[in-house]
Amino acid sequence: MTAILSACAPVPQTGAAFDAEHNARTALDWAGTYRGVLPCADCEGIDTVVTLEDDGSYQTATRYLGKRNSVTEEQGRFSWNTSGNTVTLGQREPVQYFVAENRLIRLATDGSRITGPLADSYVLTKE
Image 1 (tube, rainbow, N blue to C red):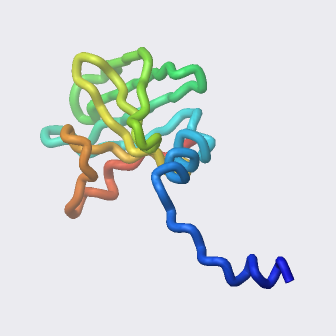
Image 2: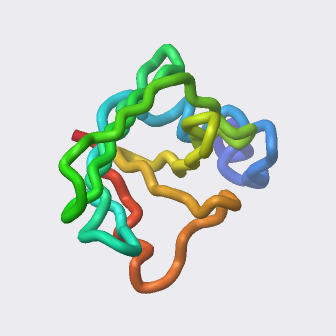
């Protein structure tokens, strides 16, 4: 009888408490190295490698394709947003990535998703 009553019970609405417990930070295997070529206004693309560590540190390496051959590297600590789905890297010029299953999605400077024909080009894939 209890099983029947449980099956008929209303499904709880997804609330803030549930969302706070189930997010990219807590539910995904996000630590690791991500790679991709991001769009560039005045070059062939930006070869980008981002490594996120479990301890909150990160390393990045970027190379502007078709320009100089030097690699720019940065390291530091990253922070999560309160929703646990976006990380912010850097202090001088912060960069935000939405954390998805085996992917980091580069966000616009205001933290919004990039839209338009190049939107799919702003994805780094986990190695």
